[in-house]
Image 1 (tube, rainbow, N blue to C red):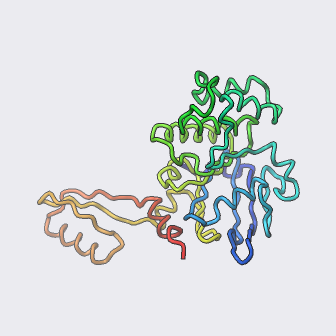
Image 2: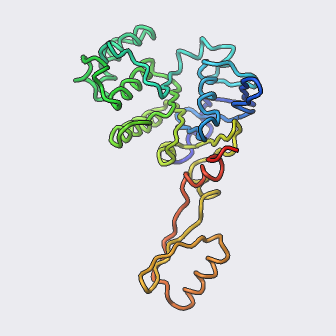
Image 3: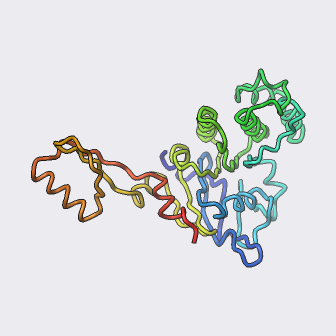
Length: 288
């Protein structure tokens, strides 16, 4: 995706943000800004500091140092002003399973003072209208995740935080959720997500930031990161119908390719763009 909202209003602003637990620096001086309507991905290995960052940005834990502003308000000093303007979905599906899907949404509509019509509209948008009267304990994992998203949208948040939103979903449910995220971003909602699915991040995110051991090690559009850090390879179809892969930045492979071409053996060359997974492994995939 192209870079979002050049010059747009920043919805999330982070400067030298830190969180320590005793001697452990879970988040170690990170900084970035996220524009209005941007889908922004925070990526990293397990324990890199992703969830801790979201917890600070949503007022669920106080930073040890630095500053973070969401929708223009300081998340530590003005938490009560931030909360009505955001919402989030953590990976734990913390629904009231003995309630119906409709009653789950009605409860949160009351808490946020949202119009009653919002419940029916969100059930329809999530394709849950027919299941709305059933108890949530009868729902599939994908249905529960859609209900969580509906609940998080009840207050029309300016910023929606999603922590591993497609984890455990079947391919069809994951596809539907990705389409929803794309629609939200296109409609102006800022979406801040974490994921271990690099294809998902590449498809959805205008920009991604890589965390490793609490530090920010890269931040850019996925395509720019792939061009900068991804493997530069090409599949070469030879006259004997074999198709070896060569590394374009490897002198030995470059010499092999030149020899094949000089001998007239090359029938076709197909360049292969690096993947975001390559970037992840190179920058943040193996904590020390």
